[in-house]
Image (tube, rainbow, N blue to C red; front, side):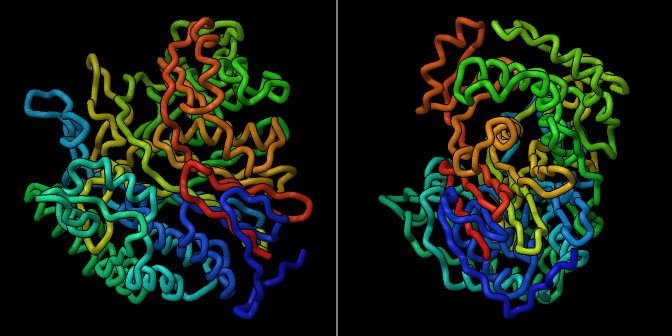
Length: 564
């Protein structure tokens, strides 16, 4: 079929809300911030495509959601090219500096350092950022508008300012160390009573002139500025000023490359579910869960029923048990992807589930091709961002990006936060003489939970989904797939579903939801239950016969825009 190419004179009619109750549109945008969604719509109005819009979104999110994401971090992107009918997978994950050793997070006695502040804050946690290289490489291959034009919205917003959101203020309010570390302290806090610093209040007009300068350089010079030019110098100088023993060098930045990986796809019922392969554990763990659940009649179970919570939690336990032992950077460790997803192995794992009571002991299995590793010591935290975009030609992006954190390492350079992504490695390199697959090694990419996902039906684009949320991301996204396929729900309803999961020993129920009523029943089934906050940030797009509908998680500050 001949595709119509947009010109800069194309006319779009934009409508918006948090969880779309709107008429379907030919395209859709769902991001975690209203400015980012509006930046994407402006790019599409000017004749750009989904890749162009994604670049504008990420540049704005660096400014408006610094607690979660930014160009000082990394990202995974799935891109569906409608003209080629082909899915691409871009790995822009951070890498460890070449000089990093596996004792990076051990103290002088060989014990692991306390996570916060010792491991997080400072130079040792900062990985070589991948976002800018990912954005430039995707633009070179697929973009339509001039590179520099994609920076206009973010530059203007940086210089003119925007109102501090409740979520940004909330995060600033509970961080105890950020207010003590410059330049973040002066940028995000103001003088309070006595010597006490107070976070910028909701509604305060926040400007970031240093970030605007950085954007202007990269807009003009390209990624070479970030990896070899003035911005690279700013990054290395910021690290050395904080600690002269910083491991990252200009060579680490110069040598950074994104990796074009094969998307990881598996059938679930009659749908092809595609996500990121390792070094993200997200796609593989999700697909293990889905294959385990596929043999059960999920459609007949209500999403908030004790039967569904039990079954989902047991599948989660089994998948996370294997995640902890076998998943890591595939360029350093052989990850037994085929073995973990084989029908024979899945049948073995599924047979362990008792639908009436909790299986007391669950450990990793022995899939074909697996090497003998010890369990990963996981300490990652839930601070990330996600967005989905479909343009009206059918090109589609599902992208998850992060600086870890919140507020990454708390260090800044050029007006943006530097990540603390190296804390996604195992803090301990070995246990009982056995190496851990996800241990720190120079130039290695830490295991991630990010799970950007695109779903196909009969080889046609069906839906996109993804979420922030640390190690809980996998469960959020997996349940959204069940919502789309088994429960036949619209995105606006899926994003509001209460969350439950079990990543090892505890069944987690989202507080202040109907799930709290299930606690005693689940405990009677053997579950150890913890009621707790679960701050997902799902963004979902679904294709219907008349166009796309979308949803943005009400737990965060997302905005859905339908595009005609």
